[in-house]
Image (tube, rainbow, N blue to C red; front, side, top):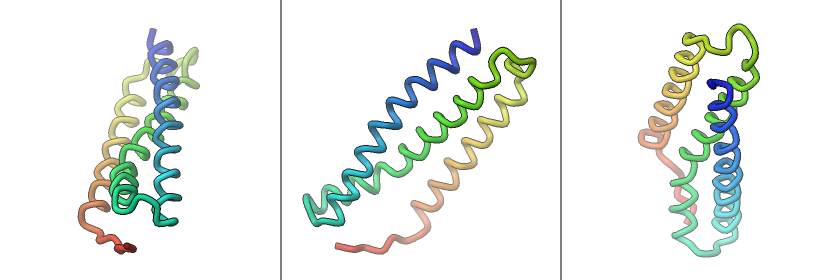
Length: 106
């Protein structure tokens, strides 16, 4: 059952990764071309943390799905390590977005 859950999370996160990635890249191109400013600037800066987190969820669920069928498939330590890793990366991204100033290019 755990292998099926990680496969489903992997499929859903792939779809979200593609959608968020395309929106993030499209708004980046629009922002550099000066189309739709300041709205594209706002959307582009809002999308960086969700895009990074979905990428992380997709990557970790792919690794976890690769463990299915092995002895370590139901290992709680691996689950805890993945959760701690995701929380540390999320905290780092929030720290960078809040405390590191952006260059305003408008």
